[in-house]
Amino acid sequence: MRKRTIVICDDEGSRASKWQELILSVGKPMANYRIVTLTKKDFDDAIQELRQRQLAARGKGAPQISETPFDLADLLVVDFDLLKFETPGSDTGEGVAYLARSYSKCGYILELNQFGTNWFDLTLSGHAESFADLNIGSDQLANPGLWSQKFDGFRPWSWPLIPQALTDLSTRVASLKGQLDKVITDFLGLTLDKVGVLPRSSREFLGVGRDPDQATFREFVTSSPFGLRRADKPLDDGQIARIAASRIAKWLEHVVLSGQETLVDAPHLVSRYPSLLTGGLSQSTLKKTGTLGQDFRKLGLRYGLIEDARFTRLGWLSRPAWRWFQIKSLESLPEDKDPWSAPDIRYEFCEDVSQFLPREGVRSFVASVDSSFDHRFLANPRADGGRKLADRNRKPGKRVPTDLTRVDYLPADRLAI
Image (cartoon, rainbow, N blue to C red):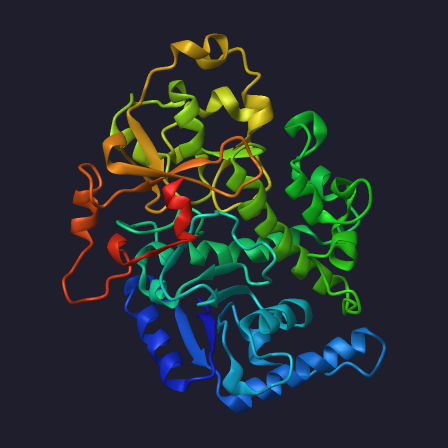
């Protein structure tokens, strides 16, 4: 089996080496990876190559064909602050992520430290404007929950599993072959009859004009403010597919799904429809719904009842999801027949630890999502029900990525709401 390549891009060699150590400290899940750290010359040469491709796409030169480390990266890990590289226009991770996504065959892009080295985004917005596929703090590179299904303690629900994310990106690119002129919402099954009217934030991401939700993949890449920059042009259809596969998936995950109203995932679904659980209302039964991956049959749900509402495009979401518009009209579900009959499950799903905790062990916040379901929950490490989880992941004098008490929850004023 071919080893996957992780390329680390930082302007300080010692820090790049530290990040390599953090990734390798995860252990067994990293056995199938090799890690490359870019030197200043590697970086300068690669960026120069991508800029030549950028100019060639604009019709201002012949395209270069020399391969770069970005083309070989299954996973690109890039620091937000790259000032010491002194390469014009590429002094931030955002600039590098844009060039790598738009003009290379780069795989998944992980950007570090734009908001700190160990933070949780209380807005749940996912920073969809960023060309990185995921934005996290560098301390979290050693978090087992970023790399494997086994996790405990701090592990944001919005994260994918990186190994699966690499595969999913390739799946999406392949699925767009010959489909670039298809309407995005039609291709994804997010049509008016199935999901209702998309929220304004979802529509605006897709394109310009009166009906942005009628944009094709090609139109999104070339015309949306979240696609290529105005003066830039795509190299070819393959590059359009790579850009669309990355950007639309981020929109789905961090704009559409984060609202839990157009699409809803299993934990948030059973919070509203506990009758869908197969094993009662215990914490262990609820925990199954937080299983990441594509197999909806492992979530402990009576999934046959909601099969018609399931989102079925493989690889476009990091977890199973269902169309809320269809589910809430199902007369076969007890909660739809009599909303007041639904039992109180006494647990709340916590976005920062990806699991249900007893109500007395959580704290609430209001996310910045375009949805009526913006009231969400976090683990409370100072309260019964959350303290045990926090203590299990705290080691005095040692920085542990799963330690809830070391995380910066930003913006902090949302915790007071």
